[in-house]
Length: 232
Ligand code: DC
Image (cartoon, helix red, strand yellow):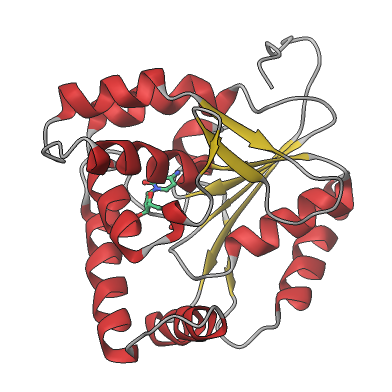
């Protein structure tokens, strides 16, 4: 994954940005699987930084300390042969479930608002751009990290629908969940992500807006792949 980009070889990138729960993680993974491309889950990087900071009981608003964590993050995404979730290893230890907690999501949104943290993660994200192509999932993939991406998608869904999806996910895992609380948490996180001064969650210039509120995942995937094949 550390392969440097040879400017003479264009490695195509599809960026899929949007708020949490819009389905972009699943959609991105499926598209990467179907195209045989690499996949970048940029949110996982912010969640990993948050996890380390939480464990060290750091003040999540101090950019200098948190960005040091970001620049030294010892992480490996172990991809399986299918298009399932990669195993995420932090210093060799699997932390996939830990970083998906609501506490980690909330803390990730806080550390992601720190400019120094975003800067520290920038090159690491760009290094995922390897042949034959990359599907990059996040908030600023099309606007900041890969501004020259061949195809940019902004995937949205209503906050109510996203809260429902999260509620269902947690229940399926046998975890307790409260729909009203989940909706409130999503709205707070959305506001923080959309209103921060650096790389706010907004559609990138040239991004195509896709609303997944009433669409099944397969329909969204098919629609995006159709757009990609029309371009090539
Ligand atoms: O996509 P996610 O829920 O795993 O992201 C976790 C947090 O990280 C989310 O609150 C916003 C932040 N994030 C970001 O600011 N920029 C990205 N490219 C990806 C995620």
